Image (cartoon, rainbow, N blue to C red; front, side, top):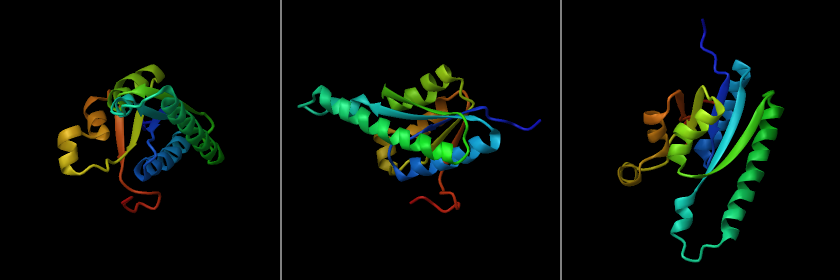
Length: 153
C-alpha cells in the first residue's frame, strides 16, 4: 500500500526557503488529495529583547502574518488544494511546529524549508528544522530546492 499523507503541515516564516517549502507542500497536497495546514509561529522571545515593547508590535506582527497566510491560502486554492487552512501561534517555533500543532491537527507530514543558519549559529541557537526532525512524531520533509529542484540559496 502506498503511503498517503492526509494532513500536511507547512511552516512559514517569510524566508525564501519557507516559500519553497510551501510551494512544494501545495504539490504534495494535490498529489495526495490531502488537507494543507499553513502555520506561522510568532516567536515571543523576539519581543522580550525589545525594551520599548508594547502590544502594538504583537498586533502588527499578527496582522502581517494573517495577510501573508491569506495570500498563501489563495495560492493553494488556485493550485487545486481543496482543503487549506492556517494557524497563527505565539511561542517557541521549535516546540509548536514539532509537537503542539501536529498533535492538535492530526498532522501526518511536516514540511519545512532548510535552515539558513551557519554552523556557528546552529551551535548557539539551533535551527528549527533540526529540532523538528529530532522531536516530531510524524514524518518530516526538509525542502532544500525550489520547484525546479534548484537550490534555494
